[in-house]
Image (cartoon, rainbow, N blue to C red; front, side, top):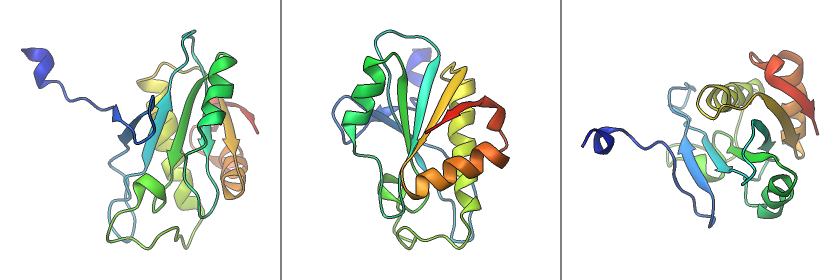
Length: 152
């Protein structure tokens, strides 16, 4: 009975074999941004992972990336940053930011989840396009940058 009372944070994603969760608790001028973290854990287990950061008008849908990293022993996570993809809410302007540093807060929340609840102790940031900029900025000045062991 107690298990039924425990909230389930991860729910099935729109992509088969993936799960997602909203990272609540962040703030933005246009209301709570609630970025979405997506995961596909690899069968080997372990504590190494990659966090994929998408580009400017993008979101995560590249399942071949997850397959590649899983086959190489890494758990795969991706974040749909605020106002993108799964995270976009009706009151928000799609893909808009007036300050790229907003995205660093989303990455902080994702990395905190990985460290605290997913038991990850080695992390690669894989950024595409604007996500590459965010990954580089995060590795330079993100709050949990010490958790990042590599950037691609």
